[in-house]
Amino acid sequence: MTIIASWNINSIRIRINLIERFIKEVRPDVILFQEIKCTNEDFPDFYTALDYKAVINGQKGKFGVAVLLRKELDFNQVKVDRKILLKESRINFIYIKKLDLNILNVYTPNGNPIDNKEKFNFKMLWLSELKEISKNYVDNIKNLLIAGDFNVLENENDVKNFDNWEKDALGCYQARKKFREILSCGLTNIVRIFKKPGEIFSYWDYQRACWERNDGLLIDHFLISPKFLKFVKSINFESKYRGMQKPSDHIPIWISLNI
DNA sequence: ATGGCTGAGCTACTCAGA
Image (cartoon, rainbow, N blue to C red; front, side, top):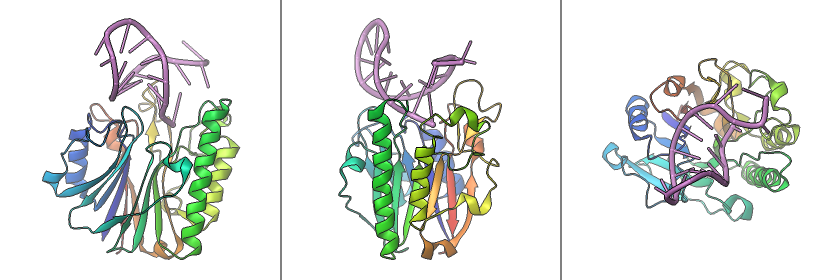
């Protein structure tokens, strides 16, 4: 049994208590964080005492991603040779030997506003490079999990009122089509096996009492390659972490694997 | 009602988020 978690943490430094609670409750083998909002040097060392090691790709003040792994888990970093994906600190790519699994932790650019060509085109190009990696790994029959904050609504029911999102970089057809192109390489969005569209969200805005009104979005996803799909046992949305003191606006999500 | 929060950087606000 293997547990892999993902959490857009919206600053790692002020969320340590919540993370420690989550780790003690779930004991994941691997945790993917997005939006750590700090440099590698400023990444807090709460994890060594909990028997984890870290792979950090940070930058000052914004974006930034990191992976925590149980310390006994051997891994390699996978080289990424793609300009757009490397422009900001938004990915980690690792290979876990014991599982024979490549894991790509992603924090996709938001892309708003949609009429700001620079921001929106960057998101589209970013997702295009993600698609190229997906195609390469699936075509060469390498096991791949891409997980994290995709900033894309896959289904119209992944938000309460989709009409408000059709002209937004998260819900517009260009972004949703690009996401579909990634899936069409052969990846499965794990949530679709277990949950109906609209049944579950992964993000609630801090504004307008969105949490209290359950007015959320499902934009965090786990995409798995064909050969590995048979190991997937469950997906778990830890919604209670949105209701705690000083929460992230995203919740932790974890999958369990029969391997 | 394109933001009514929130965090970082930094010390007065802006940028970014989604």
